[in-house]
Image (cartoon, rainbow, N blue to C red; front, side):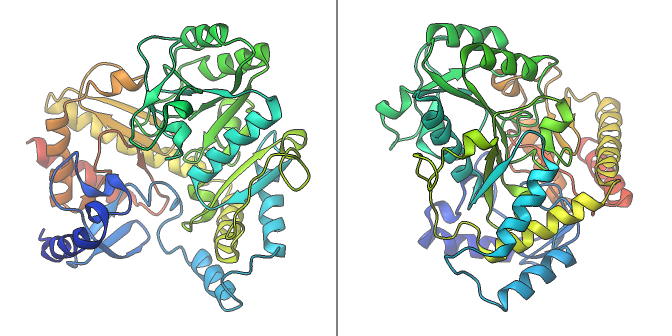
Length: 426
């Protein structure tokens, strides 16, 4: 496939946009080459500026669970746009989507809408600190919760040390309140809590990690976090920006049967528009202004176009009783096909999958945390990525990102993808 127009557009973009992109992973830094510029998308397919059609396995990093340009969502946005695009005042549709979300998700009474997953996680942390009157938080190496200062922290030198900034612009003062733990390691979490007794406001975790590739929680991990939080008076925050309304109607809380104190959402809840949200029980959410002391605001929060897209998406998911079964079956089919091809060609690999999230790591060892996610052979991944791209299949341009399966994919698309992988290693 030729990408002459994309190369030209990227060169133009680099002159006026840092790195030529508005989010770093789009720049292809970890795989090399030139980013693909998309012109339009429909169903399971992207159409780039050079006229190529690509089978899409990232789906805008998750929200396109029913496919691109899903007609009911498009219609809802168009009709709402005719009435005005922003008011900065309350609208009825905000209550409607809130009522539906609360009815679908376990253990939440109230929800507040914001404009991104980053904003949702940032606000959830502030709420947790205000509610508990504590300052420290625990996050896990390899889990990504947006680019708020509190989350851009690298590991310290030991299990109970403070983190240190891993981005210029993040202060040491901010970093000292973020404690780093190892994903799937309850003993590590327990030691940090013991070393910081009465100081930890919240543990924030991706219940299924998606930013070190797809890394599932090991048996008992989420349950263990719940128990530790109960023991230490710490709030448990599930970052369900990726997993919410994707792994089940009620997200990871429903799938794993573990209740969080605060849950953050993004991706699917916006139907493809910029939306985030955070939710909790009444007594926690009522700590937010204007009824409580914790301040959080946003001019475009509850934007009518975003609410129309999100409400329609949730309504479609809520009424489709077989959606998650179909997604599970399609993703399992893809996994089975990839395993056969990679085994046939004696390629060292590990595949992780939960529902419609899946990743391939090019190393035979188990991947269960950030360190083990780094075992994969990046040269093999580069070959894999560019080989698929040449065949018209688009996956995440980084081995540290999960794939997201859409219901719009057909079994013919999956077979084509499996055959393309066979070509790469033949």
